[in-house]
Length: 235
Image (tube, rainbow, N blue to C red; front, side, top):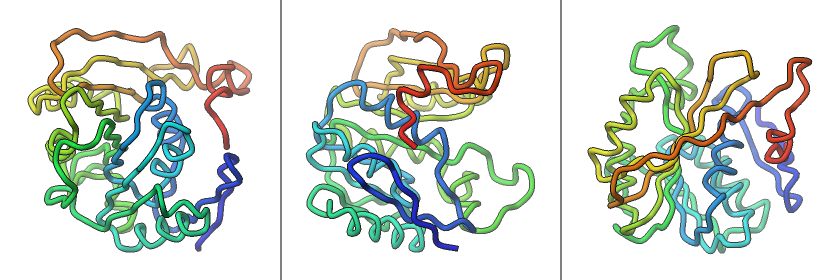
């Protein structure tokens, strides 16, 4: 079922398919994390129904944001959202395989990605639209970093969200592509629970040296949002 959700920013809305892969907390956190530093020309890989391009475009510094997605159905919904919100002059959605992306090299100052978290065959096999966003069947994290490295200008940033259990692997893969991890932040559901997400900022061509930021905790012990989560949670 196609659902129209309010983004609570600029009055914008987003189309989503409840039978497909809907965005979650990870997308909200990634957009805020990536926008902590100014950017002008951004590309979001694995953009799904366009949540990251929309959120990034909501910042005043954004001049042009492009989303890249392989699923025609998701691209259609993303383009409908862009049209509905009247931001087609600043947001573009491409239906392409990021492994052969047609965007020009070395032009973006920010690339973001909320990639598939799991290896092929992990757990139950979901529906096709969910599978694309969940498992690395159509693209690996290495494919994502290869594309990000091509698109970024020297000194540009690559910001992504992933799972803690793959921390060592994804940091190594990014570094091998010339995207040096510079900032790491772990996201905890509650202060007394293990982290459930990692936020990483890499910089193209940078020297080694990683800053680990204070923990990001989503909920208090009583289930209410923490002040830090409330500050970025516009939904």
